[in-house]
Length: 456
Image (cartoon, rainbow, N blue to C red; front, side, top):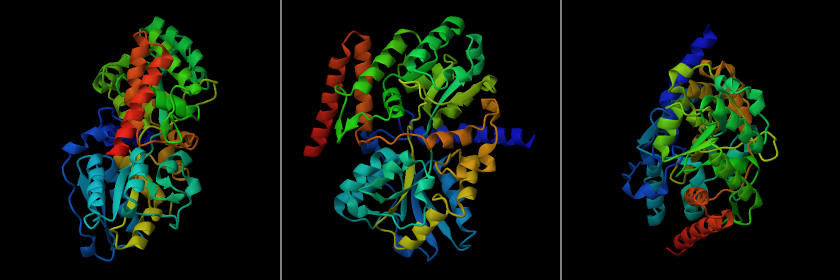
């Protein structure tokens, strides 16, 4: 009975937390906001770190239902070591408020308004460290066992061979399936685990024939499928800092798969994010959902489907089990921090896998829906509990295990520009443009954007 009760509590918490925490400011719903909206954001509250007490730190973070409960959990855990410790959480409306604060400080070469620590998006941090190197303090000497984290997650915050950030949340991709609909078509969860995309296509056609449901859907404008499918192959859309679409054989194969899935009524490309979440997932059009695990609360909105879902890994071109990640953020110490040793110790003790990490992450999962990327913390009793909505699978433990297997691929600050252009290319291909021409145009558009930014 305790297992059931905890499962219900966790599911309810994640329903109000995970989706908002990862997609509150992005039309895509992933854990990053679109940088094009930054000009409309309000100015972040200035922080005077010189007035803080000896046991006091400040941090910028967004989302009172997701990241902030995780930070509150860390404060509570660290107070076991230092009873006088206080963490001042300065809430921002969205992630881009933090980016704007760094940009403003860096542009004026005045970092005195920044807090001790900031929560920052994984996909953007590399560029901000390179553009504003004086804004950050590296944490290479922090007492953290870096080998105990998913290495793909660390690849974002490890810049020029130095660790700058401590991971918070987990963007590991899940493939969730309606097992009752699979059964209706003659399949089980095992039949969709460790398969090729060609096999997936055949299963999907049978599912559509028997149930009228698509086996997969995605926002057609903010299409994350190419990135996730490529990462599962260990391949990037970028090479040596430049977009690599046309001459990328794996990418060409992946795009061909996506087009075929759409043509075979296996994949539904939604008109926008709302259509993707509200119509295809909540509207019960699909028998499968593939995205960052923050999509779970969206799936759970359909209460009558509780117990009918299970999660597994991704198909791949070869048929090996595929692993990818989509979205996330980490914590970084700013150069305005007057108590760097305290900040490093706080991060190491809590999110960094120290003595307070288990308490931090158990609490963060229960109260904020935040899933760790720390392998040891992912083995706690809380993580091993079955989740009723997912047929009592211990999905949180499984997500951490899968996250440890995500391949590290080259990242780019133009991740979202590439996503937009590749999504447009897929639409063009479905309308009759040949694959190479469509990808060439997409690659040219990304290169144009990169060139404009470098000249500005």
